[in-house]
Length: 303
Image (cartoon, rainbow, N blue to C red; front, side, top):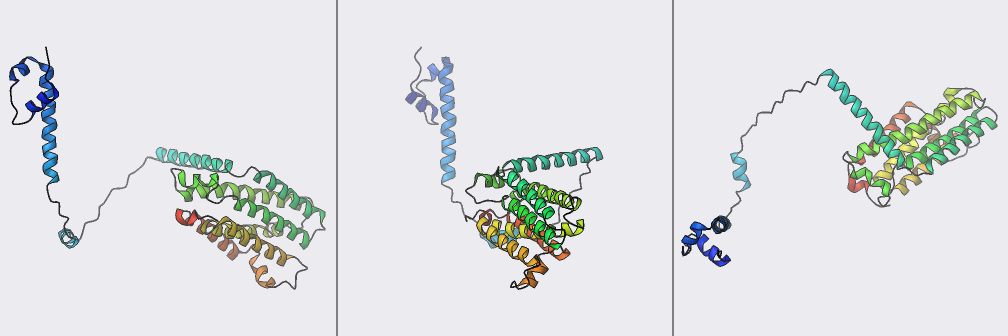
């Protein structure tokens, strides 16, 4: 049996078709299906052509606004009550996820950071123990520990061409959350090691007071880290490094006993301490750097 050609199928499918092949269509199922499919396609084409000729007019904004209700009743959604076991399970999952994210961010840090930090903390302890117990040994220990903590803080953010910066903006969680996990991991480890080293200095006779040893670096390290992070995220890592290292140098020098003629010594001595207002300022700077991570355009500027 000879089937209809494409042109014959098209002639039969149009509404005003020739109908010359009605007999063949009555006995050939394949051709009937082809004609029916072509007819549906032609009908759809006519509908699309008709719709394209319709003149679509966008109403004026005043007309749309006048049609809106003056006051929309607030949508009240009843709070969902999660069973206590489910809440505990959700909290455990969130803590587990945060731990995994912190560990993942620690793996992205420079490989040299760990040995450099260990050497820095060890040098701080050895210097404090080798010097006669007193203010000088405590201040030297605090200056070295603050520098080590500042180095760790500077390693948490780099320029946008660094591959370590990509996870901040390519993960399913917000860049601020990823940055917080990175900060928690680095600063948490450094501060813990600093406390342990302070205890070691006190035990080995390098200091007469553990409180004085802790106060010689804790607030200073957080303040320098906050300055570094704010300017590194907001402007460039190079600017953050320069300003924070400059603050560390002036602050450490002002705390030494033999620097009474140093310019701005009184101001830097008041700033380079572990006082409540210094801690508040340092935490505020760290929080500000985290908030800046919500603005990728500012955070991704090249140095």
